[in-house]
Amino acid sequence: MPTTTATATIRTSVVTGGGSGIGQSVAEHLAAAGHRVGVLDQNADAAEKVAADLRASGAEALAQAVDVSDRTAVEKAMGVVRERFGPIEILVTSAGIESQMPYPEIAQDEWDRIIAVNLTGTFNCTQSVIGDMQAGQWGRIVTISSSSAQSGAPERAHYVASKGGVIGLTKALAFEYAPHGITVNTIPPSIIATPMAEKAVEAGLVPAIEDLAAMTPVRRAGLPGDVAAAAAFLCSDQAGFITGQAIGVNGGWYI
Ligand SMILES: NC(=O)c1ccc[n+]([C@@H]2O[C@H](COP(=O)([O-])OP(=O)(O)OC[C@H]3O[C@@H](n4cnc5c(N)ncnc54)[C@H](O)[C@@H]3O)[C@@H](O)[C@H]2O)c1
Image (cartoon, rainbow, N blue to C red):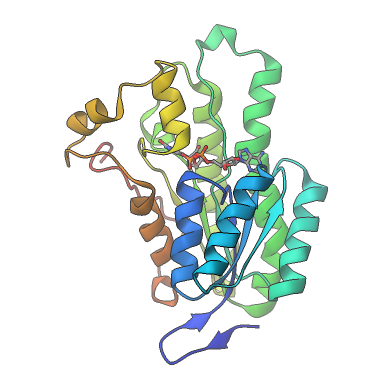
């Protein structure tokens, strides 16, 4: 159950993809706001390291190794968080994978893999916690989509479609759950300097981070903390009148 301090209500939160990049930074921001954090990630070691670092900083945190495309595993991991920390009131879905290839080369297996993690994974996680939020008549969900789903992008049709699906899912849930005190928003970032982006740079799929910075209107690279600060605000009590929105964190890349 939520506990109220002099300044804020402490809540139970879950961050998927919390072992790296944007998700890790979101976990750190939510912990800094005083929330209990369930760090879910397919990479067990990464999730455990993030949770251990949060605990070392004085936060309550636990790690769960889970593939978000596996519904049974998701429900089990959410159950562990619920049992330890109470009903889940905040969910940020950052687990995601990317892929790039010309459209004719996207085999059905590759299409299915991207949709399973990015879109079905978001469905699995949101549906697994929405009952907690509805019971408490308070909830915050922030999905991480992509600016590529706003602008389109070449040779990423499967990734862009998965993230476009996430934006649509976010808006549908926002409507359905607004009367229950639950807000659902999405952050579609442009390129953010994370291990995912670094791998894409190394593979020659996107320009070097410093070149991207020069091409960005604000003239710097996006950082995980830029996304996490916006996500943390959307998860706060103060953000209760914001729902169904795509809050771009992109340095002016897509306006
Ligand atoms: N970095 C960018 O430039 C950028 C831009 C737009 C959108 N995004 C989106 O932001 C989100 C976070 O990306 P990031 O840059 O932090 O990447 P990242 O690779 O640093 O982190 C992603 C995390 O998700 C985890 N993960 C991957 N598949 C998973 C699965 N099936 N189940 C559970 N965990 C899984 C990984 O282990 C990793 O820890 C992704 O959804 C990505 O599509 C990133």
